[in-house]
Image (cartoon, rainbow, N blue to C red; front, side, top):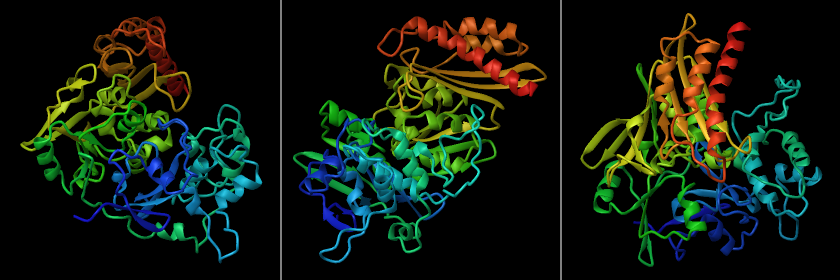
Length: 491
C-alpha cells in the first residue's frame, strides 16, 4: 500500500510522521502555511477554512471549503488542498504575487483589520466564487420584509457561504461588499479549469503511527469485515463531531475507520415509492442534488450549522451520534424515514422512530453502520421545520420541531411531528398527532393539540433554555404552523 500523501497548493507531500489524529490545521501550520489559523477548534469560527477538491454536482470537481481544525490529515490521503497562500499567483523571482480576485476585493474594500480571520474568509469566499451554478442576477429577488435581498448579491454570491466565518473587528459590511463585488472566474484561472477534470479518486489508506491507526477501505464489504474484527473502532465521515472531541477533550482512539468515500454510501436514488440517501453524502451534496425535491429537508439545511460544517457533515453521522439535539432527526421522524443498517452478515431496515433507545443509544449493533436513509413517497404537502435557538443561524437548537401533515378539504388526514431537544432521544409527538388526525384544521383543534404538544417529552432545564420555555415553544410552534398555513390558503 502506498504511503499516505496529500497535495497542498499543487505540491505533493507525505503525511508521515504526523500522528493519525493530527488535524489538517496543525499539519499545515507545521509546514509554514500559517494563514490557516485556529480560533475555536470546534468548527465555529472558520479561521481554519481551506479548499478541498471534491466530486462536483454541476461539474466533475467542486472546490469545497471545510474546517481544517476538524479533519484528520490522514482523511485527505490522495486528495488536493488549497490554502489561502495557494490562491495567489506567484510571479517571476523578485516580483510580488498577484492577488486572487477574492483577496483583491477583500483588500480594496477594507474587509480586513487585524487579519486573523481573513484567510478563512478568503477560502470560504473562494469556494463560493468557484461554485459552478453561481450566476449574476442584476435584479435580485426581493425580501418580502423590506424589499431588499440582503443575502444574495447581484453577482449570485450567497452570503450563507460565509455563515461559518466569524469576524470580531472589521464588521461584516465591507466583507459583504467584497463578496458582492467579485466577478466570474477568468477562462485561464487554473482553479476554474481544474473543475473540468475529475477529482482525486478515493484511495485505500492504512496509516499507523504510535499504535494508532487510521484506515479507509475501498469497499463497504471490506469496511464491514474490518468493523467485525474491530468493533471498538470509531467510524467517521466528515469528522465534524469526532474532530471536536479530539481537539477539546483530547480524545484518542486506537483505530479510526473512515467511510466518507465509500461509493456504496454515496448514492442518492429516487424510486417510485421512496428516496434513498447515502449516509456518507454531505448535507451540501444532498441539498444540491435534491434541489428542493423534499421541501422539509430544503427548509432544514440552511438552519443546520454553517455551510462549512454542511460541507463535511452527513446524515449518517448526525444520526449515528444519537444526540437528542441533532437537527435532522425531528425532520426525518416527521418524514417517517427508515434507516438501512448494514453489517458483515447483511442489511436490515429500521424505522427511525424505533432507532433511538436512550441517551446517545440506539438499536445499532457493534460492527453495524448506517448505509442509507429512506424517505417514503409520496410526501405530505404541508411541512415545516421550526428551530428555536439563541441565534438565527449556526447554533444548537433549544427545541426543534418537524411537521408533516396531509390536510384534505380542511381536515387533517395524517399528522407526523418529530421533536428534538425535549427528551433523552428525538421523539414523535404521538399524542399530538392523534389529537389532530381526523379533526378539522381549525383554530379550536390546533389550540387543543398545542396544549398537548407542550407536554410531549420531558423538557429539561439546561444552559440553552428552561423546561417552561421549551414547553411554551412546543405549543407555539403548532400555533405558528396553523397561522402560516391559514395565510397560505387564504392568499
